[in-house]
Image (tube, rainbow, N blue to C red; front, side, top):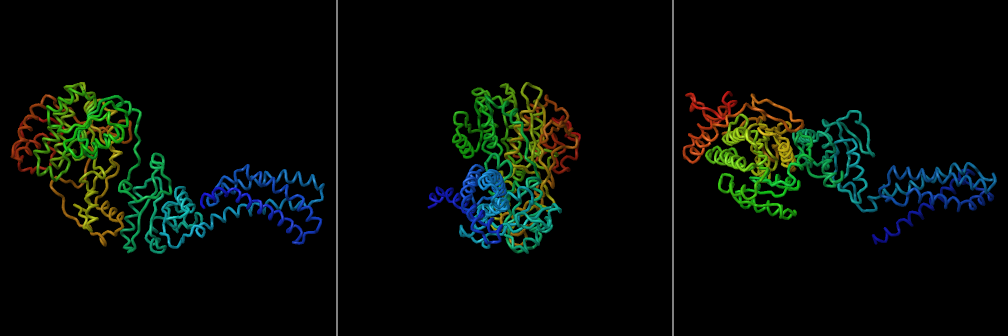
Length: 634
């Protein structure tokens, strides 16, 4: 039946138009003669009707009136109807007046096209207006939707919903912060006010869904709206949704009407990053690349993105067999089987690294392998130093010995004035990389904060607690952290790698820090619950090694621009390369000792700004030299 309707739709439309044109022409005569058409004028009507029908329908065909779909009738269709009627009216007037030689009521030629536009357009728009009756859906039973953003995006979303065969939502009102729009309407839907009206609008209009349809500052707006809702005490559960970003529309071919649930990444107060893909592609094309920690969150994303730049080989080194299996499987399924070399092993295994460099001679090393969990490393400082510091030293030394072109060490914002063993072990890694930058290999580090969705991240912990019914535990009401998505973090890492000349500590633009308590509340709302009512939020206390807030630069760092808006450079004082082997030997000796205090004292000796060890232990001056003179001065 459906195919039959499609097959015969154009003839049906043409027949309806023919009827509309004939009726409009007849009505013009009726109006001209006060609904009493004389017999002679009826002869004029019948004699000229075929001319009018042929010319009108020919013009309709020429202007594409039979190419559209009735239920999508719009202003463009009305414009086409006007053009077709006006263009066809010229030969109609010329032929009719030529045939009748002045014995024809000229007012009919003025009235007829006006009525034709009304009837032909009315047929099309009536189809659009009655679609709910034709398709059998009841608008009153649809979820009631509030659209925040009465701009072009909001209008597009509303129009897409109105065009749908079976709409999933019913838009009942708009909100917009532009006061000039308040009290107006878009396609009959009122604009009630700004974001301050959210709670009242939800209550008064019985809103089920709040759709954020803005293309700028989306994270801040979404966070504010969710905070207003969660603080309103409104008992009705409301879903918050948004539309695809411009990047999703372009790259993933999604439409504005493809509304989706708000993701935690939407809450970040960040703009999309701009990457010089040409420079990054040129760096990796045809090169052999070694990626350590390839099964982790950052490491696996590095693998995915580097593979897209046509490298010769990518060696993926990972000590977690299951993680290595899955990233290798994923890359092979994407068609990279001939370019990927899975390596099960540890960055601390010097013989493995030498064999690897001897066999493949990697030109670029991306070092993402690390122990990252703060609380675990507080209890296991020897392991933190062995992996994050000594592993970095062994890998960097091997890369330099085999003439690698570039070595990028992935650090963390916790390395800035570290309060944790994890942060301190990463800071030592930065110092090693800085000290080794005098050779031909271009050594560089890059710092950034938390990555959304990584294993063990606060977001995943909160999500598990919400799924279990709460409570959601937050360390302190004022704790803040920097966040960014995995994809954009890796994009900027690769951008920094392409820019480095050796010795730099790059710092990624993390945007504005996020208050963890607000993040917890927003996650609860995203899951359809009301904070402190359905899911409780409890505050505990900071754990050993944790900070109230993170930093990206130290007080003595010289901050320099790189020419890229999202990549900066922190320039510390020069490190003493001659001390590396001696200090690493001592750290290696202490890392295999059961004495935790001894290795913590050594960390404090090398990094005086480290605040994780009690000051009483260092009441006496610490003898010896330091790898990082700036830390000594802190």
